[in-house]
View 1 (cartoon, rainbow, N blue to C red):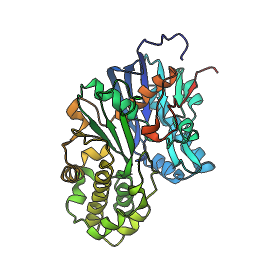
View 2: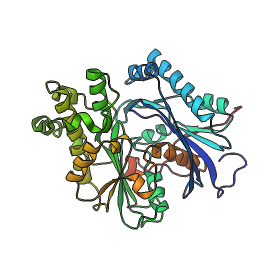
View 3: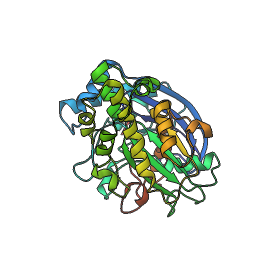
View 4: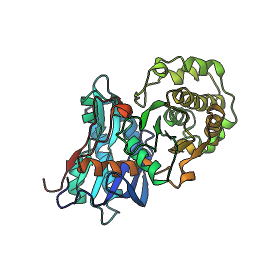
Length: 369
């Protein structure tokens, strides 16, 4: 627990997230006691420069060495820059940048030194959220489900809902808000559905020098290659039972499957691959959700949203429909999780990461230590 804080008092926590899409840093404030959300506060975004993106992209897949060190320097500097813009913050949740994720092998690697950030900000920083979960047999991802449960309570959900985050990788959280706590049996099921924006972004960067398919305009002009889609869905990952998680680059064959297609057809096919992997994952939900609430960059792609609506048997809407901010939900999640870590509350459980027991991940670094 942070010195001088009462266990029941809400804290003004600031969360930061740099995702696998490598676009920039999201930062957002949440006032919470680590259980319920009292209110959401200010949010800001800092885009990476092309040079910074190149450093981060080069470091992907590295566990250590000069590439990882260069990425860490970019991450620490960018986070210090954006987080210093916030005042009256009691605690910071710092996810860092995932370079490699191999929970059944070498573990998980997020670069960025929380102690250095605590010194730069003069505020306690909670970081290294995933390691403890992996060490106890969990996937270490996804980590937002406990926050999703709190969000469902916040907007007054009365029946099961699903949160679908479409960032670099897709992940799904099924929530039963009728349960009293996130850690209660049957309250949550979470897992990575498959690749989302990352492969398409990589394809368009390589072919056209574009960061992403803005508004789905390129995919809208193409035709889905059904043969490539069917081959993609034969990947063994989709038959694994959840919880399960992915690394950003776990599906390298996607590029090969669309290599001979036009830009438009390749974009349409990769978008369909994302939607189809979500549809495959939905069969694992304990009961059908009343609706799917989409967060992350993918919700801005009307082609992808239409494919999801056609594929799923329930309404598919952006999280803004329930008053949430789909651009900042992950940053808000790490603000919320930081308070849980500081107060000794669990941040993952068997149904979210496959960990053997309730785990409170994360390290608290205080300035001057």
